[in-house]
Image 1: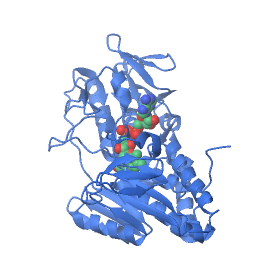
Image 2 (image 1 turned 60 degrees about the vertical axis):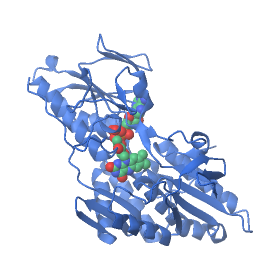
Image 3 (image 1 turned 90 degrees about the horizontal axis):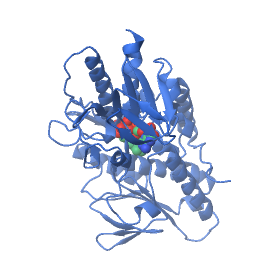
Image 4 (image 1 turned 180 degrees about the horizontal axis):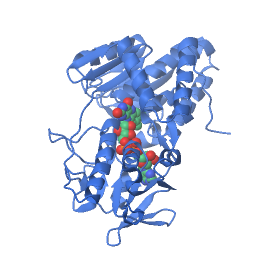
Length: 410
Ligand SMILES: Cc1cc2nc3c(=O)[nH]c(=O)nc-3n(C[C@H](O)[C@H](O)[C@H](O)COP(=O)(O)OP(=O)(O)OC[C@H]3O[C@@H](n4cnc5c(N)ncnc54)[C@H](O)[C@@H]3O)c2cc1C
């Protein structure tokens, strides 16, 4: 193809959706990826960074490295405005990028649903920085607790019984029962871990039998699971519940939900329920040269509900939008997006996980092995895979967690 007629595609966001689009476009377009970080974060393993199971750099992959094969360009920064008349996007560096197609793939942010105190007192887990803050906070509070030889207790509370909250609570319990118990058993025995879920059961997207199994597995690890429990307010050391009860919480980890990245409000594009309003072709409504993929996109499934904010949706949409742009290059008709749900999984700790693929569901050791292999498969980069295998083997055979450093201050 003649290089001069390649369309210019600017992709805002180098996460699952944006990078899938960039890689699928390959050399058929002049691609520029814009992201505020110069790496892609493998969010599904972030909870292991927070709980000292994995080194932070194993879940990050350089965007420039991922773009090398396709000769794509990268700009570190954030978009501040779109000029629709001239088809340009302005970055916070003041650089102006012209485009023929704009793909918006800036993911989501923690949603507090207006709950007072979440922003001030709870820790979110959307970035590596936040994961390291959780790790540092847990380890610092543990060091504080080690000074006491009385009955002083430390309460760690995870809010949100979806896969992220469940995996986080399970990994915290393993950290406390293993490495921290070896470090100072008196202190470790005085750490309480709770998981709070507003709905009637944890993991509501799975079959009820798998939710039950997961709850039992968490309880066996020592996690107190509270269902039908809605948070009214988060305080500095307590959580105030709607039923009037108060739960001690020196550390609150908020895993109760996400919403489209707020930057969409600056981009003068149509928004629906904090996501970009899109047609079934994945074009943003009334802006046929703008596409939205992943968590930020308001695409709906056959049931008329928004598609879940999960990595497979983002990757399928990214590849689909790349194919749509290629169709336009060849003057072919556009198609409509349909999500192929390949199933869900969550892990609750050593040897324990659940997998559900349509009507097939299984748990325990086979599910855990499936979980391990699929996460390794999707993790980007040989170095990250080897590092992760080394960390996992070390944790598995020694019951230790080598990454429990406090590294957020001098
Ligand atoms: C802790 C956690 C665990 C998860 N576990 C799973 C799981 O096990 N399985 C699963 O399927 N899904 C999981 N998810 C959800 C999954 O990660 C998301 O659905 C997926 O990342 C969405 O892809 P995306 O491309 O839309 O956004 P992302 O992958 O989040 O990428 C968005 C990119 O945009 C960039 N960006 C955002 N705002 C700006 C800005 N203003 N300027 C510049 N750049 C910006 C970000 O830096 C990021 O690189 C998890 C999410 C979290 C937070």
